[in-house]
Image (cartoon, rainbow, N blue to C red; front, side, top):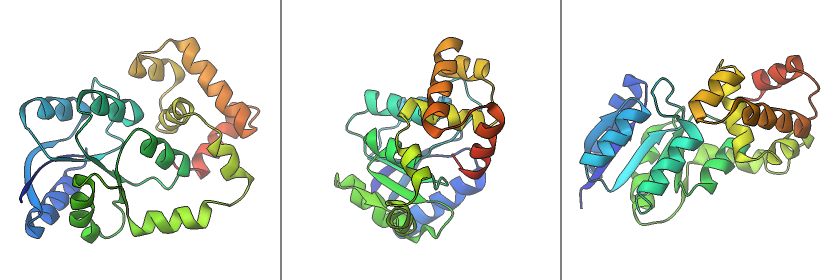
Length: 212
């Protein structure tokens, strides 16, 4: 069975490489490509597909990326298996993504040879985590206090921190996520409290050393 697959990534080289791996493997054919959340949502409306292979971070469109994007896809297409290509090594992000119903996680900085197997696995409704991410989880799962503090963050708090790390300010994050400035400020403050950070300087030091 040749699966119908949509791929979404804001980097053309990644899309080209992903499409090549998929179609050369014989696992399926790419029926649409998207470089933004807006394009992805438009493609899903007109192209029936069996598996969505998507990046987590696709900034620049009118629609929010990240957690909000995954949530929107899951709400409108609850039966569509989603495989996420990740460059994040932050366990809070990975746990949060998995909690939304994303079945597959593949580290796109490593070999893409696992991608065909991952696609077939999630299409069967089974979870798949690439070897490099499994190794990361095994190494960090019981690590230090920093990991415990990160684990305490809510999905929304992690999302606010990710957007702060991308260079957005609170007002811009509020507009992007369609929330009030006070809501975003509170989520930022709650995250800082959980992380034991007293000011913005400490926060941005933490963000620099903890890729989101």
